[in-house]
Length: 387
Image 1 (cartoon, rainbow, N blue to C red):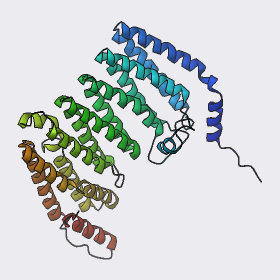
Image 2: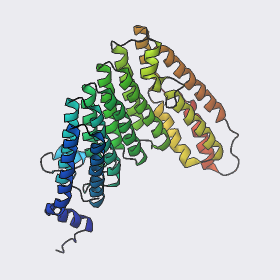
Image 3: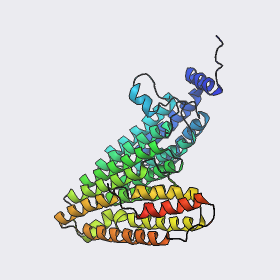
Image 4: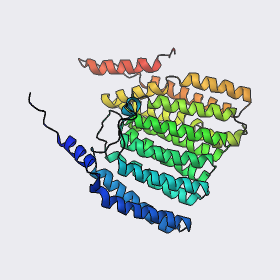
């Protein structure tokens, strides 16, 4: 029986995997830089720690680029079914563990400036890791990015638990940037992971009674929802997960002992529920409606089909979710009810305008695809949902 020739990808993976000494000089340089980070942070020399961490990030970015498609980083499926049979890349793991140790030491000392420097390094490495892929491939996932982001989100959540609000505020933006980058690349499994990370950060902020961190986290989730409406693809369930996370966060905020008057509700939940915010539910709905009408008139069928599907996902359970939230707001006598009513009002106005705008003249001639697309678009928007 003829032997199957080894592919170049397999050859690179096994060569690097069986010769770890090839990266001995790189690890020595990284270890020296990590020691400098430790020494300078103890003396609160933040300029020096920033430069040392920047060099650590640059070296690890170059390492990831060199090991593209040959890194030993298991996928989520492998981790579930073969948890003890496949290890992780030793060089990357050791350096991430040291960065995690730096962050943990800074958190225990309440050194917010140093912890922010470490999380910035991890966030930059997470963005850079999207250019590299593991040897083990899985559709919709970049396991290298997921692996790096576990250390980032863990450090941010630990800081939030210790009420280091500056770290948590910046961390919400870092998780948002990673989630948006994953949405653009259609790495939907990684995006769903970051949505869960942001929801956990919001839950921690509610438990800590920190409306400042909660507002930043809600804005991050809303920005991801807007980004998905612009760059996302239907059928990835990202819209549904984002809306469910935001609804759970709002229910948690209503159940918290924090005040429910106008200013506090507007500050903490306004980024999603206030129609005047750029990434609120109402603003996203209006933007999609305007784009659907524009594309319908220009007969851009492919892009129009994507937007129609995203519009349907956006409204899949929205009315029921807002109704349940409104009932809870009435029981709590919360000013949130005003924002819910305003959101529903603006959404209904946009929906009626869309139905009237899609009442275009019938298509003449033999272009049945164009006629069918226009008719189904109008019918799907005007059809009431029964879920």
